Image (cartoon, rainbow over all chains, first blue to last red; front, side, top):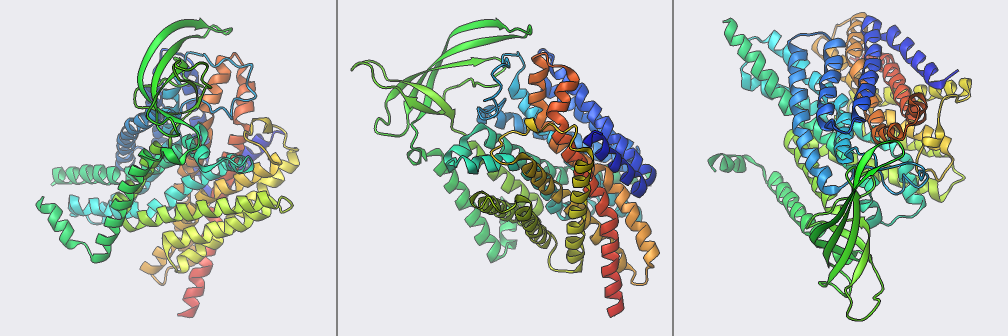
Length: 255
Length: 379
């Protein structure tokens, strides 16, 4: 039996046991997201399509799945969705500047030693692919943070309908600060775990500090980790502001 | 200007010292990375002028079209005994830039200077790498400033937690490499206990919420590891393609398991702390709340976070394979073969992490209720 099938089975069992119907939906969402990645990959293979724009479209689909499908379409998820999109846009601009300058696209020489039979002249702009990879690795964390802030803000406004926009914004920021530490930790450890082999490799082959810092692989991994952390941090004020803006505006209309 | 003065007046003495120190190290480090040429033994050259001398359209065996360009560079040596003199370099790059780079004036490169053939001829060299340290330092500062600006105290604590954890990890790996008879899993288990205690204490402070979260994290991580291990054992690891685990100098299975172990830790901690702080929050609002009500609310919170948390790990792991997948597809590799070869380990990591996340929901719930009951009994 295939390990992946068994692990997926165990995960499905646990999610449906503990999460009930919502657990099942969360599990299906994982598969839908996998589907989105595969479809995106398929289009990335066409040289004429700009892969950054493609990634933005994929991000819209992924946020829809994570927010509207797992939860439902309501004020909370709508504001979380808008905030996710704005943060991703800001991040795309920032990451494009960084990847262009640091030249971390494509593959490091360490990765390609055994790939002599491959043709690397495939006509796909790997600088854009590098931007897409960083955005895609952060999108899950960004939607999670946006939801975690929008949801208690909505509750706050529900219990205190006359709260001012400024107060609500401050409340959102304070919630954001509480989750900041754990969200960044989640990303740090996920990447530490993924790069463990690379770290052992650097240590085993006794690379000097200068060689490690300037190597394409290490710097691209570091840039990914730092951009991911910047993304989950930037989404905090964006979500607080957007949610406060929409909730309090709607409120004054009702009066 | 007026608001700046207001903010400045409101700051405490400690804050001012902190900000001054921060700005000093910011400026200092930027000056350092822009002038650290003499610290490198390898010659470094800064590109002054570029000139594309030749462009060729190319079609490979799989009908992918690309263009290869030859670029002549004039660069200035930045270190060594010939500092300040000009050097001629040749660079070849393609439009896809998967392995090569297009250089522009201002780029800094590591080079190897060729032996001079004849006196009076122009100095030439070969490019061996790109100097990336200044970009790394710059983005690290953007990271620090964004975290401090948005998170203030919590931002500072997360930066400290990242640095401390990175140091522990590096030390643990040194320990493993220098004493290879010691098991990596054992070293990792000890580091995981350290990571958990330090990160949760830094994020949440010394209180019962944190203790409950620490115990829940450890129980959650170790039980998910056990499940994953059993699953690997039962299936005989059928379907895992270890050959794609890159950078392997050590027994690959242990490295993979240890990475899987550490990778899910952050997410498990996140779930554990969310469960314990929200349940303690409910208890603090109403000291007489029944255990049944706590279990009910706890499960509701768990259901809310389960989906997004598993997605975080999924995207963090799977996205990294995108460039390799594209390369395989463009080299006409079969679809199923490419996916199983390049994604099996990443998917196994994401699924095992997901199992850890979901398991930690009830574990965190009951651990916290145990602590709540203990607190209740004492009062």
